[in-house]
Image (cartoon, rainbow, N blue to C red; front, side):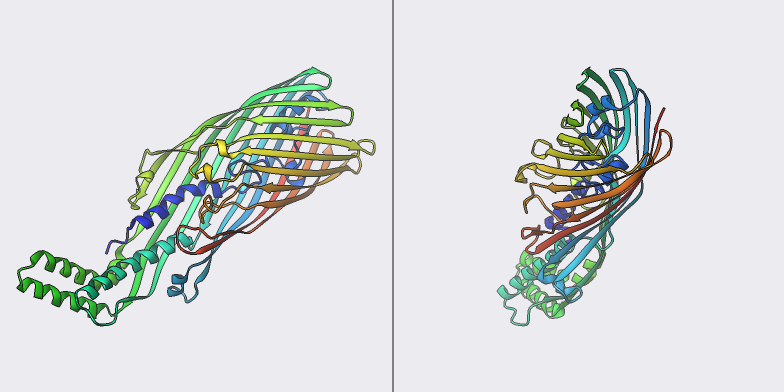
Length: 487
């Protein structure tokens, strides 16, 4: 019995899509928008005129208060889970319940970023390094439902075929049925996108500044998955094997050698079904690498207590190339040297802020539009209803010369469909809320602390890769610490 059916091969094709599921950050499908600790406590940074504006509002750097050199060093720690709850009747043959939960965890203790800028009169020169996509390793220690459903189908289909063949050849006994099965399965996927950005600002007049720059992105992905120790228990195997053996002997006596050999093969297959199941393993150890360049433009308008920032990041074309150590799935897409497109979608962002109460209270708003449907990625973008978008609101209050506190919220809405989602590559609409503050240690040296919690909606998929139902959900907690220095 060959357990490497086309169905199971299709299951492993989805492994590459896990790239889009690993991200431990806020943002769109492939974009991390939190590049600093300031973002965690207030996601509405689209009108920032602080050092973190390098990512969120690069043209706003022109309105930093003083000339000189600015630097910000940050680290974030992120903790995330992904849970797939699947309902599929045959799952009851492995544990007794037709509903199972598959949980993946991702923990990242070191997610660094650094921003630096030099302001001189009407000019600002800036550079940054950050994790602009991915950022963690997602580990499904007990595999995923599509793995198990593929196995069940691959066990039950040949039994049905053998029973049909036996009935047509005169077998009148009880059919062979699958009584139970077991397997070991696991999938680990890692994804990280390093981004190095450089740019220049010029303040045309006192109220308007322009920015032009680019980000060089390097993508590194890795996959390690397997299905092994597959065991199956079936009833009436001996009776069915005996029937095929006797039928083959009868056909041989009539000189029907070809038909007899076919029945001998069926007899061998059914009698060795359980042993054959335990011998078939699938494994994949694969790494992918690629790079791309993102042109970035921005403009900022500043008048008294009002600031408005706009930026546009162009689509980043990225082609990933496989470096494969092991691939026993039989899928050419994972062979060493094969290339796959994985673009980072274009991003349009706009933000506004206004200072109240003698500049002690700052209220900010923001909006992001991710042009997902224009990007080329493994998931068919035409299966999306629309592009992703986000709305942000933030509040910041200066207590005194030493302390300030801030909070903010972000609503993310994605143009998802059941056809776009899978257990290995799923997204959920979300609501994030951040809180934190800053403490001026000494003049020009500030400590930032923050926490961001994201609550995800559940997504029900009634059209998975097998005739069942899947419910997706996630959790996410991120802690950040950073130091800002100006001289």
